[in-house]
Image (cartoon, rainbow, N blue to C red):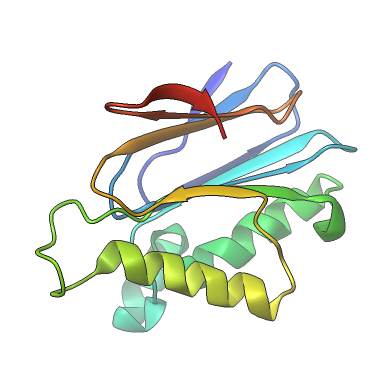
Length: 159
């Protein structure tokens, strides 16, 4: 079953028939994680780097921000038996879509915060497709961990 992860959303599944998918990653970042032993997958689609921008929004919608959404994504997969050291992590998005260069740089800031969080927690990204100026769609199959990226101009390919 296809499970759609919306903007500022997160989903986790251990059902082998499920595929998690998120659409239209512009400056937003999609994080797909998978444990090959327990066959649990999780996906987060966050919009902004730092919840300090709005504590009220962070309380109501923690998946909107990298610093609140990423830890919750990992914690939720642990409930299904995932182990941090086994997780395979793939990242997409962080583009420069509607910003003028050098003004907000939301995509770049989103990616920088993710890298800092992962560095502090000794988490390595297996593969990523970030930056540029195109939208991306990313999906991950729970059973196999197969992660597919779709972009205009480059089509569909395994990430």
